[in-house]
Image 1 (cartoon, rainbow, N blue to C red):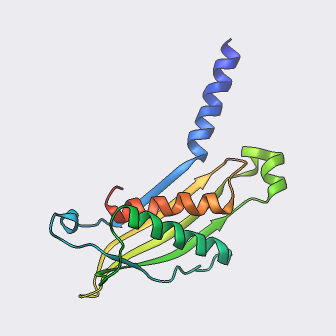
Image 2: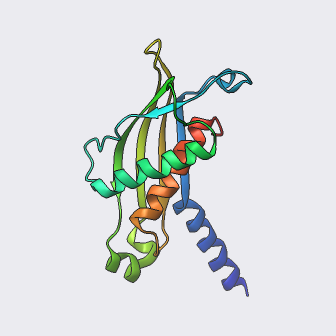
Length: 162
């Protein structure tokens, strides 16, 4: 019984260590930009791969999921855009299918990290900055899943949730 308890504690500790996301905010968004009567309408600039080997279809999926999420939050719609979002993917790692299935959590984790800047279109000033890291050890995570998870984390930062 004690051995099972030790195994479960170790497994849950590994799971917590390997799963999840980290958002390091360098310049938090001013919460007053979301006050009633103020208009927030984001424009996503081209998502840059930085010096990573992130595939083009990952960047396209990330852009698409982010746009959908921002529209759900009411932060992106037709009309004049007052805030620009610049995204650079700093790090990207997706394990190959065989390694992922054969080694599971011992094969490492899938992950992506992006550097986000929010720029006021009128003044040109950076009003928010963050590094967002999303990772997952699941053996069934696809590139599409990782793009969706990462877009959700970025959208939460842009919404002022993180």
